[in-house]
Image 1 (spheres, rainbow, N blue to C red):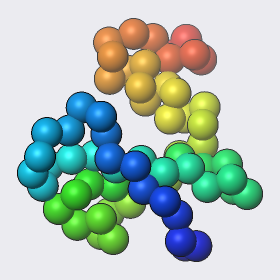
Image 2 (image 1 turned 30 degrees about the vertical axis):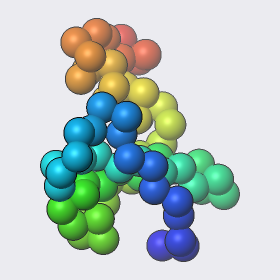
Image 3 (image 1 turned 45 degrees about the vertical axis):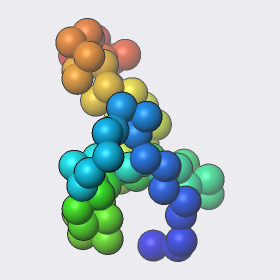
Length: 66
């Protein structure tokens, strides 16, 4: 994976249990990882899939009506 610039969640207090997000322009992929092991498990999703995930997390419906 090419070097990407991670941004820490604004909801994160200080500590190791934080979510980091980055976007890669050419592939148009949203990447997620966590502070404890930022090079470990990295989730990659399309912008539409990431939007659907946020919809579910927020308790709403996805943009696809699922």
